[in-house]
Structure formats: C-alpha cells, structure tokens
Length: 90
Image (tube, rainbow, N blue to C red; front, side, top):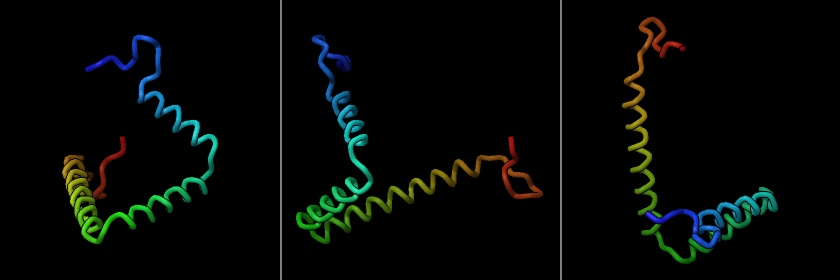
C-alpha cells in the first residue's frame, strides 16, 4: 500500500476531501444540505426506474436484517439478571 503522504508535500485525495467537507460544513447550514439532497433525489428519480428502487430496497432490507441478527446474537451473549430480566449494571 502506498504512503498517505506524497513525497513533494502535496495533499492526498483523502486529506483534500476531508478539508473540503469541513469547509463546506462551516460555510453552509442545514437548509443547504436539505436542498442538495432534494436535488440529488430528483436527479436520481429521473435517471432510474422502478427496478432500481426495488433492488436498493432489497439490498437495504437484507443488510438491516443481517444487522438485526448480529445485534440479537451479541445481546444473547450478555449475562441476564434472572429476577429482573435485564443485564446487570457494571
């Protein structure tokens, strides 16, 4: 893997993106982000059909179900107080 810093002291793409995002966040308010989100949603709906939305819906649903299953598994490993039915406080 390449070094994150370039030899001639230029910014990496990652650093430039982070700094640009931070500057944008400082210079714009919540309404700005609402507006660009709305415009992005409109552009996406013009460029994609029902099948696209079905596919991303299925992918999201599958990922959420897997996340739910993972949470269930890790929660079952916690000790439970038999009288209260909740994990003991530490």
